[in-house]
Image (cartoon, rainbow, N blue to C red; front, side, top):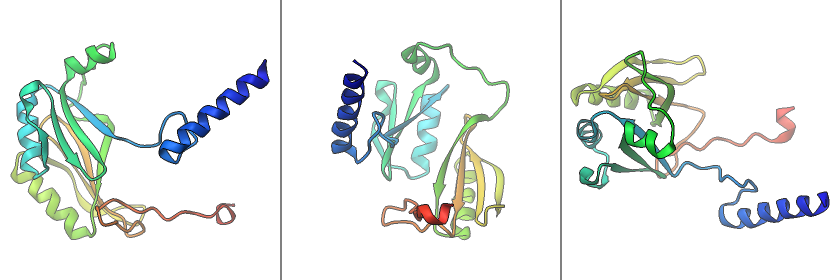
Length: 176
């Protein structure tokens, strides 16, 4: 009996790897990131003002923005909690610090320019661009509802044609 279980697990892994290059039953990718929000209209205006292309209008109670490689959605927090069948989380602080999203850019100057633009459209810089302990340059901003975003330049991760970081693979022998 245990042999059948092991065989069925490995078969599922192989079948999944044909679809996404992974042997995991849970694909290693983020297709959509959803921010629960209190004011859908205000947050939609903020992200549209960043110049991010909106995929669908917010008329249906949700907004979608196309990003390089994924979609950002904005959805009322109470509806999101109800859909997940959990209690609505109420934060005691002005910032949502259990997660942060990040945008990599090509230079420290682009970090500063992005943070300056954010302040022009109603966002708030919470950490000005500065040299980071890991050898790059980064700063943080909060959207009007306190969601934190890092804008970073990592000189060790070049950007591809879509602006996504290319992380150099470390060989098994150099990791030892």
